[in-house]
Length: 189
Image 1 (cartoon, helix red, strand yellow):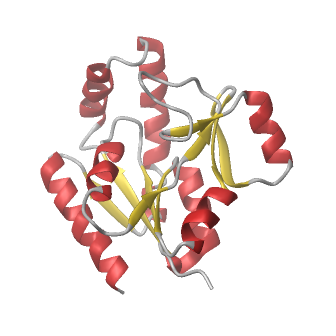
Image 2 (spheres, helix red, strand yellow; image 1 turned 90 degrees about the horizontal axis):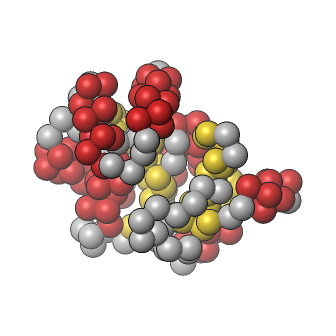
Image 3 (tube, one colour; image 1 turned 30 degrees about the horizontal axis):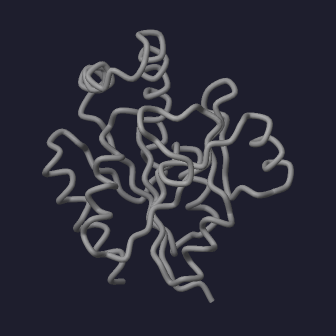
């Protein structure tokens, strides 16, 4: 019998999702981050097995064929992201609550798979102009990549109604506090 619960976070890139998740992980709620696999190269000081499991596109495709993923998506050309079943099972079998940072399609797929054992949370930016400002301030992507992410954000926002809860991140401290209360309530049920 699986004893942990699952909390799924999805959002357009630059919405503040990772910041909110990192805050929640520090609140003593027995939350454990599900480390996703990706075929993209590490950014900055990211390390394999810490922020992501970094796989080559070829290795990622082999793991898809082997049925190793709970969900996966080719988010950008040759840029796969996915959730390894072994990672989720490891955490749940230890009675831990699992936190996911996934794209909207992956979030919907995990929610469908786990049903009421999972809470899906969509972090919404206040508006596209603010999202552009945040992406530019990160200084990790080229202008072309930023434009692509903004176009993709419009598509991702259309998934909002499929999530259990939507948190608008127009004020980071407020969004963190609101998300903390939502997660505490879910874990207490």
